[in-house]
Image 1 (tube, helix red, strand yellow):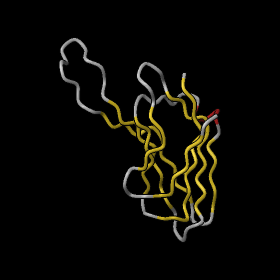
Image 2 (image 1 turned 60 degrees about the vertical axis):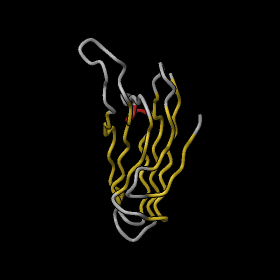
Image 3 (image 1 turned 180 degrees about the horizontal axis):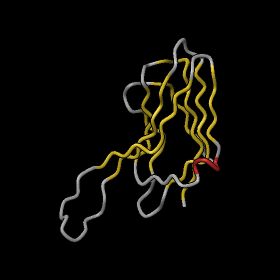
Image 4 (image 1 turned 45 degrees about the vertical axis):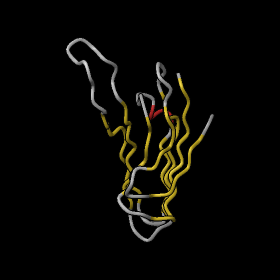
Length: 112
């Protein structure tokens, strides 16, 4: 199972991209916050829907799929059973409440 690792940043950090015609599934999320303050981390799904009836030129969509807050000096693990219903369609990115090299976000994923 592939994993992606980024540090906390207020700018969206790329984790992985889902190929067209498949679905991305996050199987694990670990946030190791060894920084001096609590951090909130959000996983975003950024995609453009296909052309459909009535929508000739669809616009890019950004959907928040998960949000987790981790206290200073703590580690949070979100297990696969809690992530079972999350589906990602495009670019998967992590965005945090602050820039912090001591807060690491690790995401396990696969494609279906």
